[in-house]
Amino acid sequence: MQEKNVIQLAKSLLFDKALVKLNGEYVGAVAAISRVAQNAHDLNYNEIFIRDNIPVMIYLLLEGKFEIVRHFLDTCLKLQSTQFQTQGIFPTSFVEIEGKLVADYGQRAIGRVQSIDASLWWVILAYIYVHRSGDRLWAGSLEVQTGIQRFLNLILHPSFRDSPTLFVPDGAFMIDRPLDVWGSPLEIQVLLYGALLSAVGLIQIDLIDKGHLDPESKVLNTHPKSEFATHQIYQSSYAIAWLIRLKRFMLKHYWVNSKIIQTLRRRPTEEYGDRVANEYNIQTESIPHWLQDWLGDQGGYLVGNIRTGRPDFRFFTLGNCLGAIFDVISPTQQRSLFRLMHQNQVSLFAQMPLRICHPPLESDEWRKKTGYDRKNLPWCYHNGGHWPCLFWFFAIATLRHNQQYFHSEADEQVMNTLLHNNYELMLQRLPEQKWAEYFDGPNGVWIGQQARVYQTWTIVGLLLTHHFLKVNTNDANIMSLPKLKELSLF
Image (cartoon, rainbow, N blue to C red):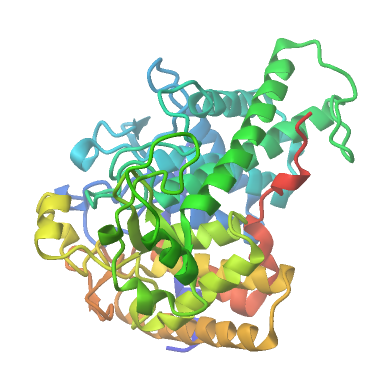
């Protein structure tokens, strides 16, 4: 099938089949397009997930469909929890049942997991929408600013831990089944960084438009008399201070390359006091030997998790790509990340880009850490499966880097070749494999054992990749967030 026909088919599936209306207006897209009458086996794939709709909404913004994105954001905002214990969180998904919106905050999910990432993604998408559409009036509305205050009240509060990371249970993000990713998983920390940047950016838009903040210097013109604006300033200052600590923490504890690993292996253990070299008491035996070949001489990446005595050195694709997109890691570190991914393309890209994490849990490790989860068998689903919906994040990360930062022509050519080769592979395989949710096996050749077909974010992932590679490369900057150094501490 020719490229033009594949892209046209993908667009038709999105606009004619995946998008759904509520009260006459498009409100989002279902997780997967049902090919049969709705039945119990569809589970919740007919619901509208915040996480799954991020690529959908990004694509609609590129197409100029601003009103759909705004309606999606408003609908999610109306569902933001106001209950005492969960005030400020957004639902994982929602669906219309008998004319009413029914939201899932984890109370209906398999294993009763709570998707923390949904709340973080909403704030990020809200900023991207305002930046792309120019809808400052929406950003400054009382409903939006109140929603941001609820969200920040949820994040910026006293706790038992002094660490700037967000502590969450296993299954709290895209990997929503047991995979031993509890505590401070990478993806949540990167999304937290992006969400705090976005929240401050949206608050400052409101303060500028109300005349409280100078748009150039970001210095307060007058101290606002309203309690609401005073709280906005307090939250912004606190969020910026948190951002500074979070970035330093992640660069210190999550970023690794060959040199850092060698240093880690030679650090003393059982240290006590304020100034120690091995803060998390990491034993040499916990550092896997496969890192020698994986990192090579020039590779670097953000590890999957940091926790006392048990660092998780697995490579998680989405967290690393977002780390580059949101500038958690420096331009030099971004180049190290891209080199590592190119060097390990047989493992990460193979016959269906991209593998969600590497390496998978196997044997007794799989049994103990997943609770014998049959869906997360080794090389399956979240446990080393291949997800085509991840490739557009990698495309944005590399193209955006090439446009904004210094790089060698040789590196750019290598990455462009990798991008286009894998785009062609997806262009050929995805329609043949009915736009499957994920693919199994070391090479990603087989359709996932329990994968849904006509998965919306698989379809939109190809549309986004096509747009960034063939339509407008400059749009790779669509997910750029406010720069930390440009935000004011008031």
